Length: 197
Ligand code: GLN
Image (cartoon, rainbow, N blue to C red; front, side, top):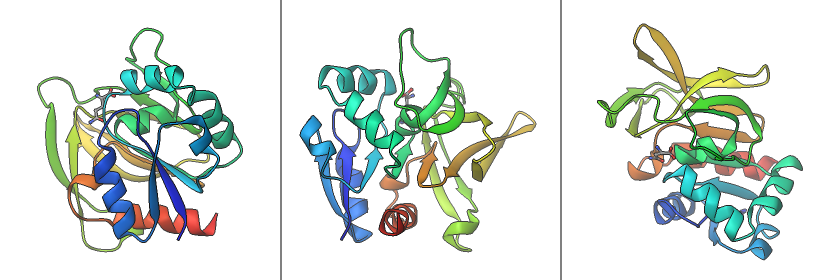
């Protein structure tokens, strides 16, 4: 089994640990710098990206994580995790930093206050014909993608398509939360990526 770390400073860590284990990985929470060396892949959960950013710096996880991401560590970020993996951020908090890696610009809380949370069925070719129930909670969307980034799914809002699932090599990110639905195909995709990395 590949060992996949779940960044465990804040957010819905336990749901990701469960989903990863159902998908055939050994999942460990990552709270200490020494734990960063032991993982074959990283999941960054949903939660609050400003808090996650602060705690990463306080717990001295930021530098080792950035280093491993630079060196090609496979990573999957959902919601706040997508923000953490993005190279660029719009409507971020003052001083907010991301870990980076994914050549995208994310817009934080992009769907606005009126649509705090919603659900939608998305078709994602890589996951087969069955639609994915996507749960959005104060979610970001992807405003811009770099050349090497593949858009896996988009949501149509205000007359435009906004990417909500992307992949760039061994990095994947979703604006939504597959860890809360019991459908583990997204985690399965990531575990396969880690296996073949
Ligand atoms: N709005 C949160 C943020 O900016 C993300 C919400 C979530 O992860 N469900 O970090």
